[in-house]
Length: 173
Image: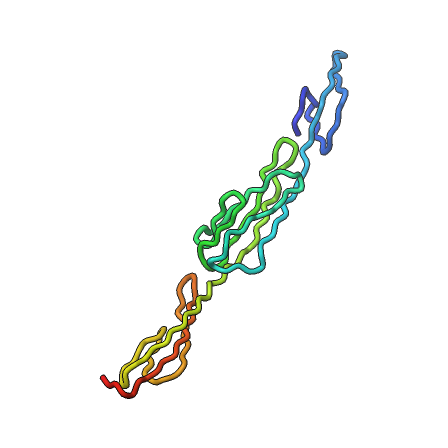
């Protein structure tokens, strides 16, 4: 509670103007201001994927004051002002906060968990092999004609490799 003048240690929970007195008969008007509670509201998209465009965060505080955001893991998501940039795959906590002012107490911070999926990259290749030769596609070696698919995984992407192999029997190693 903030005061102008004195209030003999009284605490109030709403705005008042009081006429206070002293033992010697002097009176003074005391204006008291009570701070109000506030809440923060925000949400995140249901699904994001590594490589998605930055997300504009649009939380609000019930007091109408600006909301400040933070990330608990900048290796997955980085927050600058109200912009969230995906920097990796995994789960990250994004927190919205409002520190309050002379009229409002700080809001209780709200944390939402954002799951960032790996990006799927599709690659198609066609190969012609000599009879008896082989080629490694993804994690497997192939020497017979046919259609093959394999996945290469990294921290941020899963690359799907679809390949067609033609073996030319007229050529030998």
